Each structure stands twice: as C-alpha cells, then as structure tokens.
Amino acid sequence: MGFLPCKTRHQLSKAKESLEVLNIEGSLVPIIDASFVSPIRRFQNLGHLSVEVYCHGEDDGGRCIFKLDNDNVTELAMALTQLESLLLGRACFENTCTTTVSCLLPISVHCVKLKKLEIHFSTTNIVEDFKNIPRFQQSRSLPRYPLARLGVYRTPLSLNEPGFETVAKGMIDIFPSLERCEGLERIWDRLTERIELQEM
Image 1 (cartoon, rainbow, N blue to C red):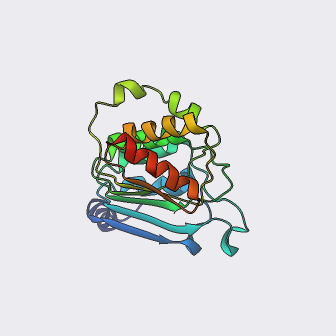
Image 2: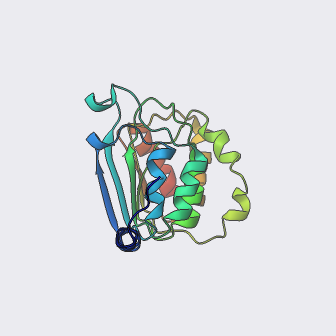
Image 3: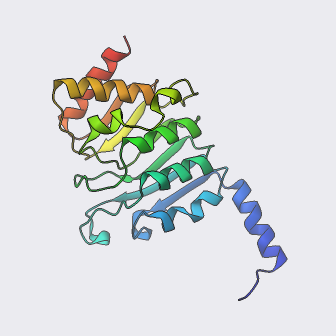
C-alpha cells in the first residue's frame, strides 16, 4: 500500500477546507448511494452541492438512481453544515426510494443556512411517516434554516383531505419558512395552498 507525498496530503487538506461549490454532471453519476456521497462529506465548508442528474435517462439504463436512506442523508447533513444549496438529483416518479420525509428533519436541524433543497423521498406512506418521525415533537424548537422552496420535481403524491392537513402541518413544522413545494404534479400546488393557510 502506497502513501501520498506530504505535499499532496497538504494540497488535499487545503482543498477540503477551501472547496465551497461542487457541481457534478449527470454523466459522471452512476448512482447516488452511500459510497458516492461518502467522499463528499469530507468537504465540510461546502456551501453549494449540486448533483445534476435525472433518473430514467440514457446514462442510467432507465431506472431510479437514488439509493440513499435516511441514515445516509443524516450523515451528509451532519457533515455539511455550511450548505446553502443542496440538489441530490431530480426526484422521479418511481417512489421506490428508501428515504422518507424523516430525512428532511436532520437537514433542517444541521444545515441552518440552507435556502434551496431538492431530494428524493418516498410519499407512499407520507401521512404516517410524518406522524412517526422520531423525536419530532422535541425537535420543533430547534433553529431552522430559511428554506422557502422545496423541489420535488416528479415525485408522486396522493392525499385525502385530512392527509393534506397533516402533510402541510408537518412540512411547516420542519421548514417554518417554507412557501411552496415545487413539483410537476398539480397536487403539489394544492399542498402549497394548504401550507400557505398554515402560515396565516
């Protein structure tokens, strides 16, 4: 096993301290999983992390490439506390990811400067997921970042009337400054209307 020369180690150390913007093009992203984000966590002064990739493209074989879970997202949020913008690919319609709305809470708690967020999360059981977020009640008093818009892109959503109330309230509890959820489906606009009512 070889060793890096002292100068190279110093250069890598300086890069970890000074890198503030990291944009990764879609063609360079085979899959967004723990092994992909693990080295990124070293750049603890990152203010902007953008993984510009769409699922179901030619480069990914027509599949969802988001394979992080809630724990992976928590670790990322705890490491990159200076983030102002976080884009982890454009969410697709499959709704097969293992992240749930629970992954949004550690982002809110640890990344207090964040203004822009796009991330995959499953909405299959979103109402129950909001009800079951661990330590959610105790976490509501913690500082929150000024996120106003949450990008959900093609994430599907199906809610009945009581469900709209639960999800809108849950979103505001996590993101007190949230103004809208930006997705392609009309139902996200309806949720945004409910969020606006929560803020009145």
